[in-house]
Image (cartoon, rainbow, N blue to C red; front, side):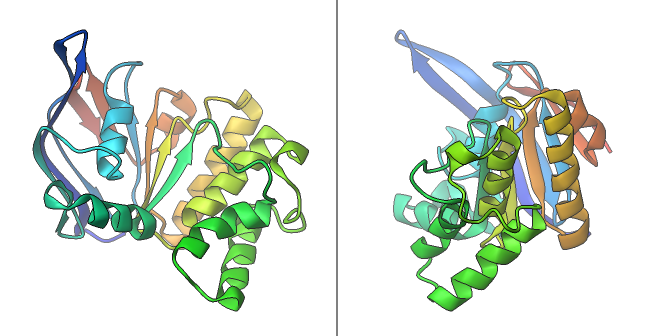
Length: 229
């Protein structure tokens, strides 16, 4: 694992309007992530975990503070450049799987590569390798409704990692899975992290993820309370 941070967050704050009132979601949050880390952003519902992931992923913008990813400053990017950043630098895993129902597992994983305009032969090699790495070799042609919840989330992991992003953001990835399937998925992502050096950042209150994380940041009411190494 590299000692050089790939993500540096400095003094990040974000509020939202609710009934004509500004509600703080994050308050002066600072943290760093190194290449190859397996990090959990932990805290209760409403603590700001998902907001932080949305800001790291370029889905939203902060009110104040700075986000540097490989020395690129997200907070001064145009919307066009943030879209390019999301396409090439970030992999996303959502608790609802977010697969396209009419597409097969292969096509769901391939979709992000189509946006990058890669050649067909190159796409096929990358997709098959990604599906194989998450244990879905032989299931490429199945659609989401022909797969279990755990298999669907494995497709989502393959989709997130197929384009070799700088890091993967996983927002409560085990929330819709039973305990055994959730443990299997976490162990899978940990193996991907260790074998391929893929950086994972989770928002979670799942103790199974927290116990496997190399580092944990704790959020409470939008503020960073503590971290373990």
